[in-house]
Image (cartoon, rainbow over all chains, first blue to last red; front, top):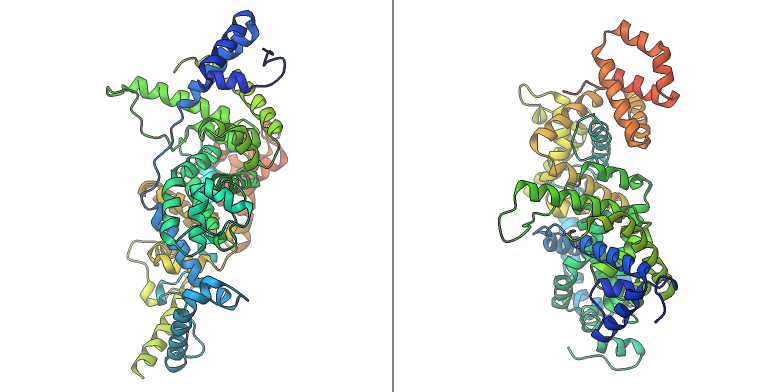
Length: 162
Length: 203
Length: 173
């Protein structure tokens, strides 16, 4: 067989170290290894790397991952209803959502016209409202300060930059 | 809902790829199929992105974006590629963009502190000693540094190859390069990793 | 009619909230006794953001480009992951910072951004120097700024970072 190191083809070496070769291929490769010190050493190292990488487990996924995702999807769908309604052709919307959305929109508009002071369009609940830009500015400042503090000698605080 | 009429190659691909079939159902408004896809691919996507960006909170945010984009694209979805190829292409694109952001340039340096996201781990069936834990954490930190030190495409290729068990053809499709380019990427990546990690020997 | 009045009241409360965030404290937002006003304002921004419903937050975030919205989520996630002591310490630092006049605040922001770009080992050295200088009386601090050792040890940019952060930021405990 061709020497994988000479041909710069890692496939055989990697597959061997990963235990992915069938018996026949293993036999052929091991025969090559017995006469090729370079491949033999590299294969041993590759096996060590393969096993070292096994150490790296991953943290478990947050339990509310799906909830957050579905929430974002729902929010996005709500936000873009007008755009989706006004698209030239959208079978799903036309077939399933349009009648409902149109009814809801009509009711909503009727409610707004009858009930709402013209100048006010609150996006959030009264005194609780905070604009995204305010939060962004505050968080950016906090992050700058946090990064500075994290460089304090002896500080073990995680200092990832975001 | 029944399968679509076999009019193009995409449909043939979908017939061979159950995920693509599910995605076609999502396209037709079937939310349960999206839930199935999410359940099946959530962990692999998060884990892949986590190993690329090496921060759990970031990985989850990016993974949310991945699935959001999948959902957004449902109406224009055509099964021209394997579903997981498409999914990992989105994930790789988002994660590499995040890494390229100038604010995250010094990824390598910040690993020196030791990562905050060590998974809880039982070394064996016995209760791990403090020494076991320390040794495990030191090895893990070394592995993470070695992987983070790889150029980004090599890093993505190794992670898909090692942890997602993708073959060269699929990795090539995810990265948008030729199969020979993937071989070359992996050859160089494993060469670097051998130089940095082989001394760890059997774990 | 009753609901019109209610909505009008609601709008008034909203306007009051917006004013308080831009500086003037409304009676309803007076800080509790013993809590500094600025810290209360920080509480107001972040805590109130956290108290908003997920729908409201997403609606707000949707007004920004996706990249900025994602960054906010990440920073918020990181902030919320801090333990109460870490949050308290950070709030304390923020308090001093936010009490600075606007021009000085901008200077500090700029220096902190420059600091972030320094190599890690220089960050540690610069931070240690800032800590050291803060402990010195004014005269000694000035003498240190003028010393050949100080000039030899730090680049002009680092010297500016050190000086400004020493002068403007509160010592860390």
